[in-house]
Image (cartoon, rainbow over all chains, first blue to last red; front, side, top):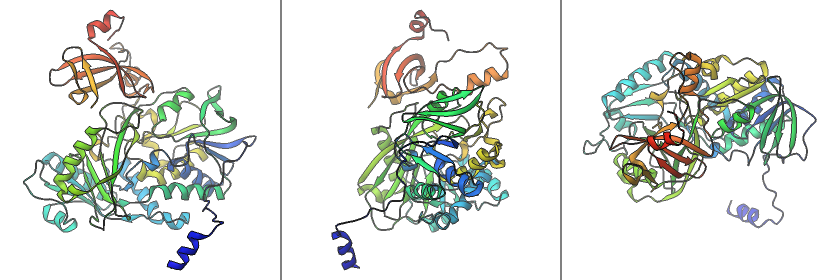
Amino acid sequence: MVLSLLRYGLRRRHVPWRVIPPTPDRFKPSYDVVIVGGGGHALAAAYYLAHRHDITNVAVVERGWLAGGNTARNTAIIRSNYLTPEGVQFYDQSVRLWRTISNDLGINVMVSERGHLTLAHTDAAIRTMRWRAEVNKHYGVASEVVGPAEIAALCPELNLSHEVRYPVLGALYHPPGGIARHDAVAWGYAMGAAARGVEIHQMTEVTGFDIDHGRVTGVRTTRGTMRTGRVLQAVAGNSSRVAALAGFRLPIRTVPLQACVSEPVKPFLDTVIVSGSLHVYISQTARGEFVMGGATDPYALYAQRSTLEFKETLFSDMLELFPQLAHMKMLRQWAGLADMTPDFSPVMGLTPVENYFIDSGWGTWGFKATPVCGLTMAATVATGKPHALIEGFALDRFARFDQIGERGAASVGS
Amino acid sequence: MKIMTCPLNGPRPITEFACGGPIKERPADDAGGARWAEYVFIEDNAAGIVLEWWYHVPTAFWFVAERDTRTDTVIRSMTVAAWKERGGRP
């Protein structure tokens, strides 16, 4: 192995592993579907349009490079222990898709079901967890409220002492919760979509839409205009800006969400640990790094900067839970743009513009939904009717005062 | 640390404040559910200069501030009275 590695390293004509086809030089005369955005959700939708609906005359347009936005900026956690019937059924379908995704896409997405503990530090949090556990179990999702003894057995590394500011009273235990390799998801869907004929146009920014009598007919970009029958917008972090180009507004405020990763060490933490009250979540990757995130920033912003407040509050709370991490060094820190909705649920389906579909409002809960978003949005675009699993997430639910309140199940909503 | 200048308390760390969201024109009481839903839920969410309600939490003081959401800079802040003098309508 050492010799083959050496030979590989010294080989002169090394051919890079080219998983994503190069951007075509010019556009086709017209497309059946143009997908705005080149992240996980958009690429998944492209894949399922081609794979399940035989719609292959599709172009994906991305302003930067593939999966360089929130797909690369999340903390890669997967779970389905939500609060509302709509949320639980939707994310449960996603967990099912995650289980077979590596085989389906032919790329190792490294899905790792670790068990997921949401810690409760107050009686109110315990009450919400009992509610969540009952809704979860009703829909067949493994979810249970556990006490300190069971927490200690599941995660012996966690500090369960009462000599802290917020002692752990209990937790919601969700065995299917886990993590995955976020880049691989996007690459896998891009490869699968491209193999079926989908064009992927990187470094192509959308500047406007051609709309004729309320119906979208074209997408204007920095590289020319694409004629198309249908458009799917999937641009987390920029949903309001792109929707404004199409002439409508959304119930979204964009705020940064910051996260960081430590130096790699030997395996130490198996479970995924979340505290909704402390706004802390942490997991250890297969490489040994600790991925940590905190609360969303307190005001609307499009800047992906980092703040001292984030580090101070995250680390002071983190060290109460894991005092062992005191000597760990941080390797990287970054921010993603979270499109927060008033009810902490996404906005998916039809829009005021005919043949213009939207997948947005993915605040801090978007990565885990990547497969099911692709699946349901592809069906919605193909049939022109919202998929049954996303009917509740329609944009017009706010005008009907029919929100899907998921705040109680959000880890980081401040 | 980001500093917000409060018209009452002077420059203070922005962590002492709460953002009340962008200033929108309030509909009439009888404007109907659709208009009120739009007022409550729908946002411009502009990437650029926005005029917002801000609140200094320790002194319970509401005021108006202008910010650039692309660069995270506070451009100016003013009392509600000063904002009304400039033509603002709450």
